[in-house]
Image 1 (cartoon, rainbow, N blue to C red):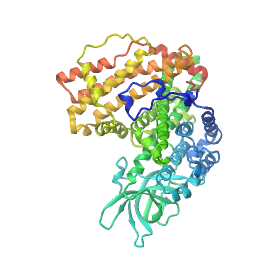
Image 2 (tube, rainbow, N blue to C red):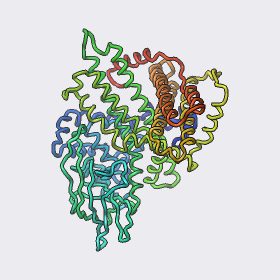
Image 3 (tube, one colour):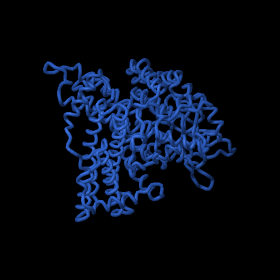
Image 4 (cartoon, rainbow, N blue to C red):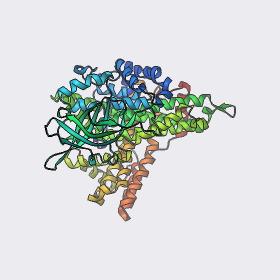
Length: 601
């Protein structure tokens, strides 16, 4: 089925929290068109032919190897997908770029290099550069002739990027900015030709402005340090950058003086979604090698895949992957549609995508957290399935385990992204962009009413839709009570904020999974979609308990007495799921995966 044939409702950022969505509002991987499937297969084939056979060489940081792989990917057009045709790109949509990120995401260190190059290494110039800057740099970056990198983090400025100590001062002749300072953890830093670097411009009046600069390799006064030795992603070039009176031409200022934060934060929105996509690709790879191992490893005269404990692990990996995929492409389609809408309104292409990504910044933060933690879960369970062999470097699952850990740190730590999820939601409510007060008041009225123990709704998935609706009510109830109780102190109550964020993360993925399955059932019928229903019902059943736990932890931290008892009673009401045999469902899911030998859902 083509996505073009859908009748869609465009939900604005975070509106899913206060509205009931229909299957028409989502987009799923089952809807990929022929071209998208072809690009997916190109990515898979490239990894199989060029990357996976030489992983040990890549991890040894063999000189020139990663740079040559980036160039090979460029030769095949894998770097050019989302870039405009006028700069040599293919001009594909946001869905296509998400597919590329997912299906190149299984390449370990190579995936990191590619994601950094096509994302933070190139997009700042594409979206904030002058026409001259774009014409000079973009064509060479999207062919892989040049590699890109991004210098934001400093030894004492990580999550608090605006506390940067690197400075830039205009030269006496007005032709250069003189940069002094240091950047660290720079992906692709050892072989890139073009760097987006942030510094504080210091004026004669002492005023400073956080600003972006395009710095080329070979710039006088600019050097990079040796390769870092890391726990994982060993083949990814990671170095420090040093600026000692580095002379950067004034024409290499990126964007406006003092507006560098707009570049840094807007690029992160896109990067977070793309990190989720890459993590999903890595999770599918780890899942498949774990399934293959479980089928061939014998203990007690039979494959370990016959054992219920192993089936539970395989099924849970598949369920969480399915949920991540559902939420990822739902959000990617929203961004794509919002971008097209802004283009039709006359916005230039750079403002259109950045505006679309900003609209769904909350969802991008949610995806980053869930995707990175999904990958950590899958590789950890993969090592467990491999047993002692999983600890051996001979098995690729050990590399996957080491490589996954960084994902919870970069693009903003998961703690920062959890805090951002609720912070951005509350700010939108205060700005009038999101009507939280009305729905929150309705939930308060419902708490005072007699519970509805039955329903006349006999439409398909009525109970599941009601459960997800109740999850949202739980979030509105707990967050509303927290804001009322804590007022201005809520920003310092990070544990409470993260509890509520976890409720939102689970709910968004639960609804995304439900909507996807409803769409699959519409197309295939309930019998052919039985396995998908198993996945959805198991995820929702477990989500109810997880949301209840996060909600209780939050409520117990700020409420007491009658108020506490009332909210906890409401929380119990809103997270009550019908009994469901998850063991039987997981066994069916695991058996299907074992029969296919791969992730095929």
